[in-house]
Length: 283
Image 1 (cartoon, helix red, strand yellow):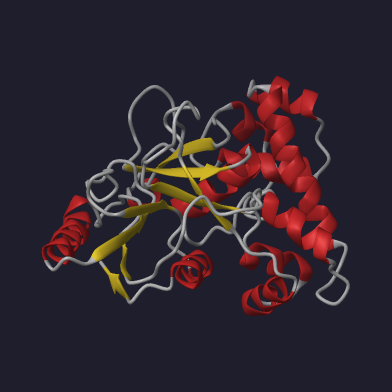
Image 2 (image 1 turned 45 degrees about the vertical axis):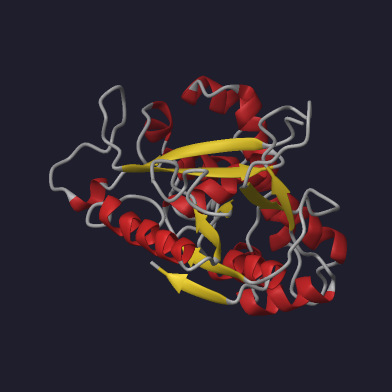
């Protein structure tokens, strides 16, 4: 069924140019884009923000300060000004007047920031199973949770494994459940109770190069494609992990299993633990 949400965000590398305006409008300034999939908007949106910039933990209210001019005129970092404004208790109505972003989205952004406040009010000792699970269900990464509760990513991961809070692999169903889906498009979610497929092992996992940016573009993706083709020639079953919808490596016929997921320690380890591949190749 149509039970997934897709969020695409462009990447702007404006910091690499002198005297460039950071305002975004109808002229094309982005150098690449990412695509994230989740079971709800919050989950997919926070994934997408981390994909665009690996130094960002998600919808973080501490990256930018509140600036009403930046809220009125879109810039490449307006999302984080919005997060800071929500942290400062700006109302959805006030933000709608300033940004003209649909209230539905503003309510979703507010959900994330409100939960961030809940996490900040507790520590690594008092965090419960339900609080951790709910955080994962609205797209918080282990690193993001660790920053809020003043812990470390590895400690949060260990706690999550003790609580048995692990993601489920879901398949994108392109036929709206009219007949069994056979696509190899996969994503991880904490909003599930079962996996959509079996894991026989013996796959080789190939990690893609992620979002296009100044200095890293299609030539690196071609390395991943060449790797997948050679593995196919050797009769090896392949898993591709990438999140760039513009690439050849994310075409449906390039690999046996395609995970549209973040290329981070947390997510790659989660996929590795589920799939138990016979090897991992970095491209």
